[in-house]
Length: 187
Image (cartoon, rainbow, N blue to C red; front, side, top):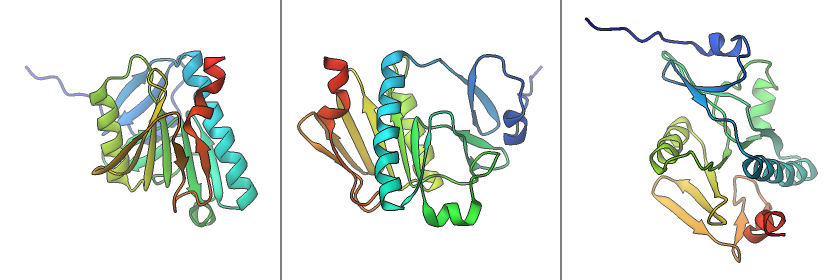
């Protein structure tokens, strides 16, 4: 006897009763997310704050912090929530800032790797983001104090403390020394 897995829609996820957990939706399947630790939360906030400051000063669009869902696939639905993200002003002009999930992938996503994340999970998430149209991804590794920059799935660069994280054409003018992101953790 086979058991059918119940498919959940993005709308059902959005209106779920709060059970104390965060979820993402992968092709209609709910995936519970482990609560982040302090280091993860600090780095997510630090990057969001630095991006927000630059994006506002330059009128580039909007930065969204962790737990913001992006609907990147339909029938069955996929909703992912990066730790930080950037949406260009041109896309905000089209959609505004909807009460529901943003209806497409952002231009930039940031994922801060947690101790419970596996390399396979990080790879799978980056594949999903790029298939949905993300232009750049930053994967932050707290343990190694590195940032892996994805410009495409075959254009990947690992930055260390002495290197500069650059927004390239996606977030024009944004620059930050990688070591500065982690400096408060080393104090």
